[in-house]
Structures are given as structure tokens and as C-alpha cells.
Length: 137
Image (cartoon, rainbow, N blue to C red; front, side, top):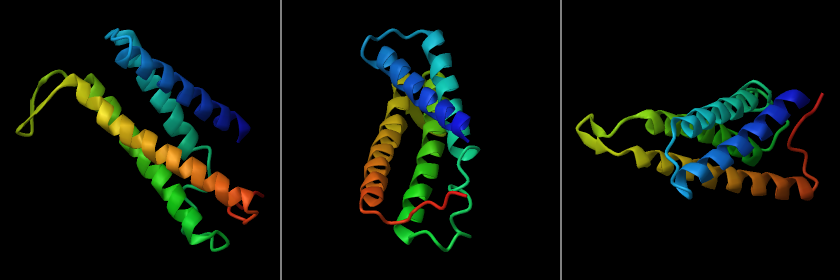
């Protein structure tokens, strides 16, 4: 379990560094795109495989409904992050009747970031209150 948490955190760090390199320094290189996609794979692996709470929340009645909602939002955010990788590798052109530029990958990434920050601060505030939200066994 701990190894997958480290993989998740390293993946988030790789995603942050590569998005900084692509956006701020404007170094549009395939190497950063590949590193970004590897980081996203690490985040998704850590989120889906490493945490039993993401998928077993509907069956676990001990958890608060707010906490279950927050963990479901984190699962949705991971799917949105995967969509940003797909948009990162698309060339400019028309898809499904819309013109899509390569810089469109940033919008799902921004949505992922907002959801991730919200759920992280919300879960930490629930944890500080002393409420039981995760059942570790």
C-alpha cells in the first residue's frame, strides 16, 4: 500500500514538473509529453489500484456520505486527467466537427487540479475534526 502511495506522489510531481515545462517555458518537446503521460499513468495507478476506498465506498456503510462523495470526485478527476493526456497528443485539426488545438489539454488538467485541491483540503479538514472517514484494517 505504501509503495503505491509513493508512486502516486511521484506521479503527481512528474505531472507538475512536465506541465510547468510545457506551459511556462514553452518547450514543446515530445519528451515532456511522454513524461507527462507516464506521470499521469502513475497517478491513476496509485489512485485506482492503491486505494481500496475509491471503489469500495458504496459498500462501506461506516464512512460518511460527504467522504464518499469526495472520493468519487477524486476518481472522476483521475479520469479527466487521462483525457488531458489524450488531448496532449492530438495534432491540430478538426475532430467531431470542432477545431481542436494542441493547447486544449490544459483545460482538463486545470479541472483536475481544482478538484484535487478541493478534495485534499476538504478531506484534511474532516480529518482534523476527528471524524472517522477511512477504515484502515
